Amino acid sequence: MKKIVLLCDTYNDMAIANNYLVSKMKEASIKDSIECEIYACSIHDICEKAIDADVVLLTPLICFKQFLIEKIVDCPVEQIGIGAYANIDGQYILDKAFSKISENYVS
Image (cartoon, rainbow, N blue to C red; front, side, top):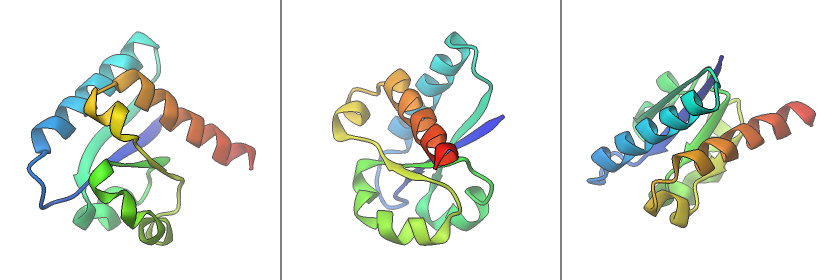
């Protein structure tokens, strides 16, 4: 089972949006019959929560920290585009996550 972590900034007021996005991604995974764990966590919890993740997705407010995050985690890190994030496009973001996971295994 793949583990997808949606990484967000602690100081923003977007917790509801991030949780809603996670629920939309879970709906898409059920629709596509994909077994995976998906959850959101703050950037301050990255060492604990993303230790065994298969991919870390960055919300738009922390995309500028990608280089730092790539040094911390041992998995691919992918930015969520502002359009997909704003539209809460769970299917697109889930597909993007699995594409990044597949790309990592091919390399």
